[in-house]
Amino acid sequence: MGKRTRSQRRGSSPKNKVSSHRFPAANRLPRVSDKMAEVVDLIHSPVHTTPLAKIKFDDGEVGHIAAPEGVSVGQNLAFGDNVSLRPGNVTTLDQIPEGTPICNVESRPGDGGKFARSGGNSALLETRMGKYVRVKLPSGKSKDLPAKSRATIGVLAGHGRTDKPLMRAGAAHHRAKARGKLYPTVSGVAMNPVDHPHGGGNHQAVHGPNSVSRNAPPGQKVGNIAPKRTGRGRKRSEEA
Image (cartoon, rainbow, N blue to C red; front, side, top):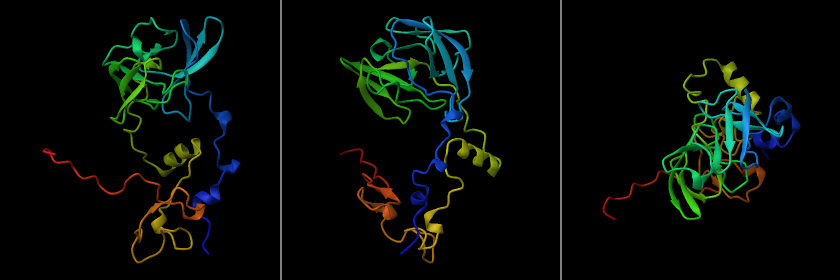
């Protein structure tokens, strides 16, 4: 019988959880309509890859949203149907012209934003289809979303954050620690058989299939978990 795997040892212990008190707020679109808000501050959040804009509405309500490029302190943001196409304004997808870059896109109306939320990313509104709108996501995949889902106009700030390499191991350590991630990580094939199902052998390789069932026990659940497909995809012939 071997040891418990690394993921088993970490488990759900509070020791490995992120300290939530270190983060200012969540990135979520407020559930408001036909309101104006003023950007009172731009905040750095260790858990987010883009700065957060602290906004204050006329009635005193305070919220936080991911700041698109071009948003500055003192700027007024509009929430509702009849808004101008300025970075930071929030409106429904059926009110946005085709070809407009958008970010923090809702999957369903009122969920606060699910797509294009990391620094420097944006989606593209491709076409309208009645009750649905086709949006091209940062991955290149197109997705049909409800026309009443909301989105923020513009491209999220934080572009180029990955251009500068991590020159020191300490930089990678602090980046992982801020997000509660394990660092450094050791490959399973580099371990002994007692430590990991992929360990052992005369070469560092997975000796056998590395796909496991969704219902596999925890000690066996490593590698590709319930993959839809494996291996390299074959290119389709031009003439089918």
